[in-house]
Length: 362
Image 1 (cartoon, rainbow, N blue to C red):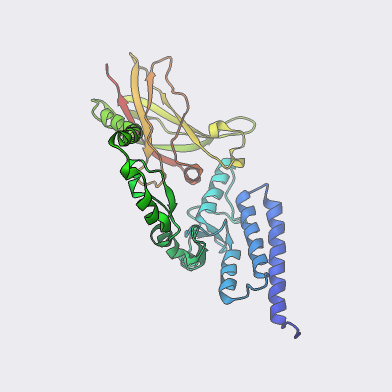
Image 2: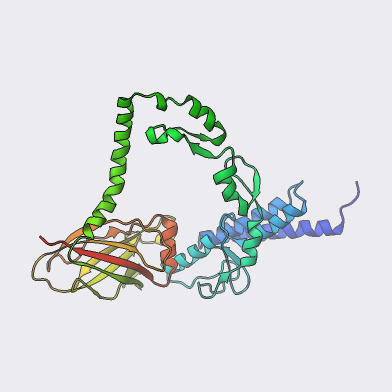
């Protein structure tokens, strides 16, 4: 057997060295930053992949090279940011690093070189995003490989194994299955042959579910008919408590709505001791009346996203009667969709939302 050329040995040694260093870094940084540890572990796995027999093609080497230079989880997102030294971070990890730094009252740093990172210091790398969009990715239904830029269209419109529903779902058919079985199922579906009484029972259940969904919007339309309505843009600014172990909280400057002075406060994970150690993150807020009133002030209120934010908030209407003795609401959940959206808010310098107040008159 002919000896391997020095270039192959050099490549193998470089992958071994990178894998060993990355694995050591992942272990040492696991406690300090889960995002950094995930990035180092991904680099180690990429190096191990390049040492596997049979993965020596140019395409595999290119894919391994891109994976090994990016800090973050598997490259599912197309947005990438880079620090001033050129290290890459996927958008999800970048936001998570900024949110963790906010919770720990630290300056966010790059997990590779520890230089400072922020939304003003880091910018997107369009060249990397374009290259990553061409990398192969596996369809979650048929397990075939496609360029990432084409994967979404394939999964939604072209894949024969994608999950679909029966066309008779509007009359109660619960079937979910692969697209290639849809024609056979619809030909044998029993719902078109059900009697009128059976269909009426199914439709009544569906109507009840629909009425619950519409109740919120009907309530909002009803509130919009009130005589006294006010809204304002509010800006939550971060502060720290005076406790020995400080906790992050947010508070707005005083603002005037409905001829009254108000303040909003917010907290993370209900003032959990170490929210930075939790993967699940939530925000809750309370509304405080700062001015004196001569009679009870009954109000409904809700918070929505600001005009220039992309955070996803599901509207929820809250109700409270304000008096001089009871001038602040309990903390109620800010109805953000999930922890990812919460991290977006925490990563921002300030949280900008829009408050609506409706005065209820007897």
